[in-house]
Length: 129
Image (tube, rainbow, N blue to C red; front, side, top):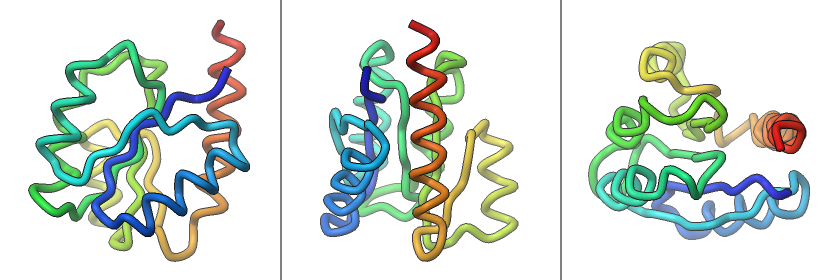
């Protein structure tokens, strides 16, 4: 069973490359995307049974990924929230932890770690079924 993943990222090139990489290497199925805070929040909150993993950028075309994270604080334990950002500073990581984020990865140098996380979470997800 593939890890149903929703991606909130406003850069089309990054979004498409991320989807291709994760679907090829980590048994991830991209089930949808959003470019804005409002669109990301609306879909994730309205479809709680449809996703296993959400990957969220912090700086979006409209709003912030922090608003998306806040909206998903009451998700199921099995659902994971990941931040993928160019601004993965210690302060940002701390704020994300306060919002219940499961992991934070830097776009510039932690893509391999993101792939590894998705592979590991996918294995745990499959055991749950």
